[in-house]
Image: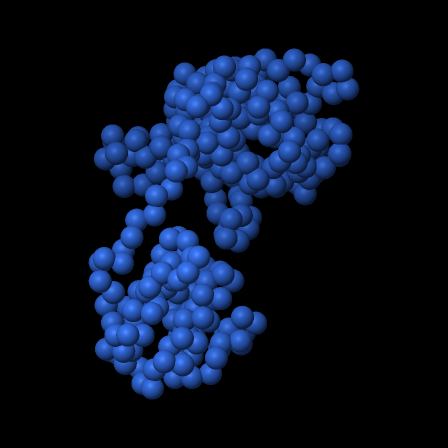
Length: 291
């Protein structure tokens, strides 16, 4: 039985119990049914309950569901169509005669965003720029922290927020693993590191004073005494990119997240070149720390 507050607001009718089974089915597969998805399903359930006297959905009702609403974006319409297509497919899997949506409604949404993929030479320049950061007047911690953060991002493809959330206890240099707890979509996972990166991490741990405190952040800001903020990362990465002379074709500085896209692209290329069917920890150019 679903206890979601949003599901409790679903209109009673012949379709509600099937939506409950559908949501439980998706979650049983490990899919995340978000709050916004529940809102769309609630609206779909209301439309079906108000327009249908049986589980058989009339063609005119289907056309209403699929038709683009006034002032509705194509992406929103696409989400509604996707919800109905998946729910209809679920009903058919239960042996219920349900409508199969025509391919003409499979509209492709143009997304102008394109990630920036770093070349190997650019990754070298970025790492070198991090290694050569000038010493500060108040603190020199950044000269130790940013070179290792850069290497983690390049060598694992982790999100910057995941790296900043790492605790000392989340690093296993023996088995060469990072342990990421409750990241995006509340998913925890192991992240493998290469032998080179593991050696860099081990050297970093030997240099920091709090390496014996497993509950402490791996990277501690000397100004706040706690973990680094994303704003601090964004500011320093802009300086590193500028020092490395790396810019997009449009003349902009790349995003931190573009390092993740670059890792995924490099890993996929390695997988395809080697004939592997799984992703290995990235081994492409990653220098040792020289501190």
